[in-house]
Image 1 (cartoon, rainbow, N blue to C red):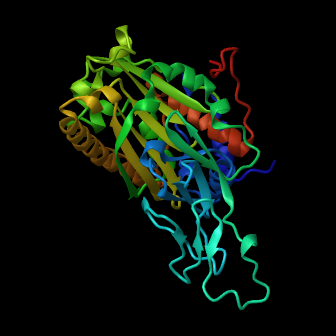
Image 2: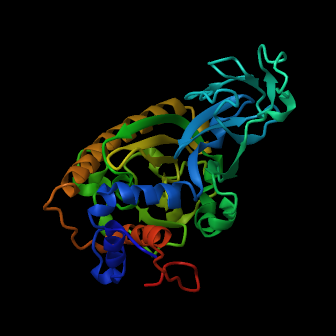
Image 3: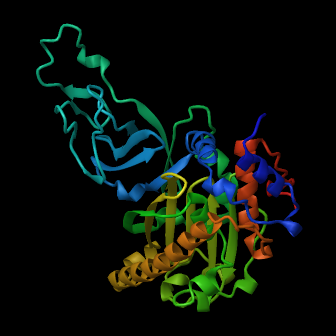
Length: 387
């Protein structure tokens, strides 16, 4: 297999043992050719998270997502089924829906061709006079769509195994949280001026918390006590066990699912390639990422509370507190990750050794090298990365 310079640089990097690991080379962040590999081998080929299922509670509720070059609408149909459809009209190929909302029918804004929520063409004005037009032959193409622990995933790959099959080990690790019962209380989209992998790495390691988040969560993060085990084939994770600075960071008194240290343990999860979750006993928040060039990333940003905090009389206060804190955290992360991209784009940029607290970054680099360069990752009998 012939490789470009960025891929060759990455392959040299990931061949190092973790004890002497260094950060990924600048070229994998700045190379347009490498980005095209990522779009083809990751985003066109893998399961991509687009949001939470409870946000699409009623028939007609929808969100839209541009997956590489394919506009997609994800919706709840007339029968309550979750489905994903091509968001492109079958007439003159206009994009059909934008953003999110609720519709009874999918109506093209260009010529008013109208589709049912399962994609069937129901109306096409002034087309009966066209001899070659056969309305039953028109149906919006389906995109593979699955739900896993409350999240929605889509893929353009018809051959890839199911999400549940790929994430079975992760489901076992976090099953006791019952995150499928948490409720999303906010959902937004943003664009930041950094490479998508810079933000991905930032979310999957906590080494940066004391410095980057000095004004918010940093002082409450005992990073020396964090557990950063080797990752698995399709995800990595680490744990933080501490008394939270916010009441919602630990288990609610009515929570009878979690016992012992699990009542104050936070899981930080990176599901390859684009889904990043902070899961606490009382709340969760997440990002899903999609590159918009080498120097921009589109972000879906959402979060919410566990069922006990949602049922609490102070639920609205808890929701406001959570959102205000996470907005402040994101301001700090944006500043840090945009600085990183500016720095790694410079001629003098050189990657240094990474900390033992950055094991997830090492596993992420090996995953990318496997998908793009054919690097052979090794795993032990438990399914986690070999050390």
